[in-house]
Length: 308
Length: 328
Image (cartoon, rainbow over the protein chains, first blue to last red):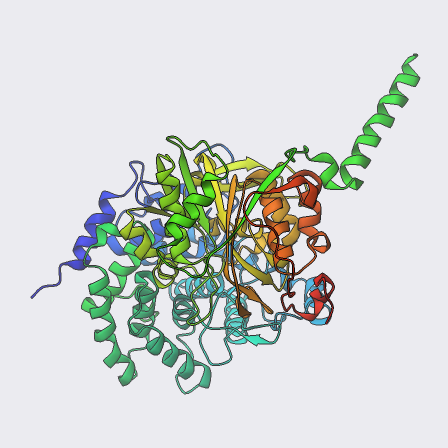
């Protein structure tokens, strides 16, 4: 029997698109947001031109267009817009500018002054400030998810021949930062592995997105093995559609290992169960990532997989 | 006055204004919004159950609130789900508060939260059993991390943010109710109704965690957020509170108390006293009591029960030992 869920999700997404293009975060919202827009473009193979139209002059994208005069500065969503463009329109003239912006953006701990502060005075959260990545907002520290999205965007840019030595260095240091921020037993959360001496638990979505960024590494690395095991165990009876969908995309990208491949179908069945009444899901980014995950399972199309 | 004197006086005035703006305590420059008297009700509740519907309704009646047709936004504290640990505002209390506001005439009750670390809001809402209350009581939920945005100028200047991007659902609500879990906090000392307002700050703009606020100073950010979007009412969950290494890794502490108030500062001072800690030694509380609400016991009218005669201080991390009213 044919699985109609992904096409139903795509149809719902298209119904929720804004008149002038793009998607808001939530059903009924009026402000275009870059994350759901980029994910929906990937899920629906939709027109990418809204991304081209909304790119800032400096190459970045704002996370949300408030449409009220004052606009936010560009930030973390730039990586997602780049991934969508690299997959749908890799010759877009805005991509080199975006890449330049992304290479220049960095967590504030990369500055020597803050690096020393974190090494000498501010040590409650355990991390190595020499390993920096990307922040959510300019002028703040690096965190796992924006760093993972940036590394994925740069890797896909490399496949298109867009990157140079600077981007290579950022990918390397960014990947090292992800390894440094991993939880003691594997997996990732927002980016604090240990605070006040207490080990913190991983989150499913952060673990999945970090594993998508670290596809070049080998599974025999302890961290990768532990993190994949965390993801498999953590998604049993998972009640969060977004988390489960990101986990599916990560497991799909690591399906070359047999036991991961076995778990894929099971998790796919669980996601389909959560998607029985997709109309109830208000969040458009969640709908889009669920459509992408089910599509990866059914058709082997995973936009976050480097070999695609 | 000749031209030279006038220019000198004008320059002096301008210099004075700059000096005042940069050097004066921010509370001097914020409008004094303290009510003449604040009302707080401490109410005993034995457990989380359906009985809370009646308890909260009776508690709210003490305040004689005018709710007819108003939109009420309940803002619980949902951080993340940790099995076996009381981290979040209990779902029974959230459901009971919604029921009580509707019974007292509110036109609409919405539950809204923007978790600070966990990006999958639906996962937190489901795992913390809020989803069940939403379904059973037909309540709407809004993910404050991803709501449409409005830019609002800050009403104090403890940080240099100048303006905050806030969710339209919060700015548009007639009554915003902060519903914290009574907990110690490893950075701010305590997390109560004021710290709970961090959750209205949208992650889509400020990140997960809302790191911009950390860089501006957690306590200072609490003050600017609360002066800009002062919660109208507080229902604090102290039935099972948290002591020690809160807000996530502390130990459950049964207090069997719910605290209601029409003043977030008075609510937080009272909760802190119930925790056996000294509120005036907590930076954001001490400053809030200068302009935003009442902290002094004589300005707080207790509508429900009296403060317990004997309070055993909550355990705190070593850096907050000075907050304990009884040093062991």
